[in-house]
Amino acid sequence: MQHFDGDYVEWVLERIGRAPRRSSTGEVSTAAVTAHLRHSVERSLGRVPPEPFRGTWFSVHVLGPLVLGGWLPFPEDGAVMPSLSDAAVEGETAALKAVLEEYLALVQADELPPGTHPLYGPLDVAGWERFHLRHFEHHLSRLGV
Image (tube, rainbow, N blue to C red; front, side):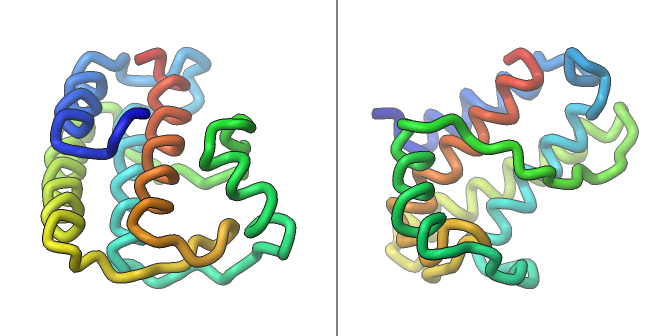
């Protein structure tokens, strides 16, 4: 199983660096995807206001484990991507790198605050790791990297 660690972060940043400026459909910029991924990590750090919980017993106890375990594809939840120019990718990549380094340092020090995902409910460190792995791969695959 892949781990959300320093090697994975380097691989993600390398992939973002070689991604086209826009997705293959042209719908979203790489900068917007990078900002969206950064925001999701910031959410797991408790740095952004939490989204209202919209989950159910089913999403927490059935859907979440199946999606985060890789048994079901990551859902298209209609997440709104920020409107960013194609040229903003370098700044967003640097911001993502800084947040990922902070996240990994907190995980390593066993200081990551527990948090609640708006659909999958309370997640511990392992749950956030699975979420971030699936979430990053979902969006990076949309960029073709």
